Image 1 (cartoon, rainbow, N blue to C red):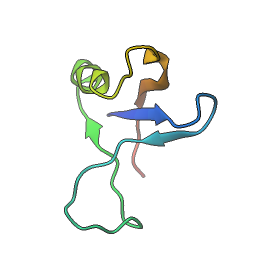
Image 2 (tube, rainbow, N blue to C red):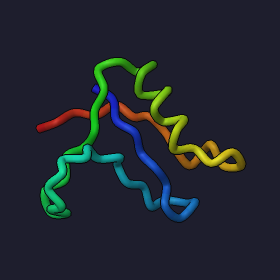
Image 3 (spheres, one colour):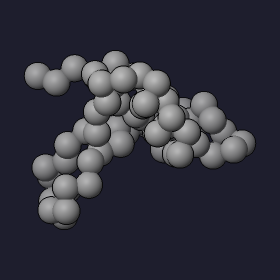
Image 4 (tube, rainbow, N blue to C red):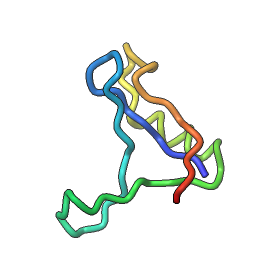
Amino acid sequence: MYAIMVCLDGKDDWIYVTENTDKCNMWNLKVQTYEDAHEAMEVAKTFQHPDKPEMVMVVDYYED
């Protein structure tokens, strides 16, 4: 599985992109995952700022 991460501070504060579960419960977030790396990369592009594409990355994601 693959997930998208976005850097918040430009250095080392990364968060996962989560699913919209329509449940406004910030303590029960679910990471949005993709089976296909190419699909994840296409979605990741929607989070990129034109001047800072390195602030978004696709990573391997393993759920427990």
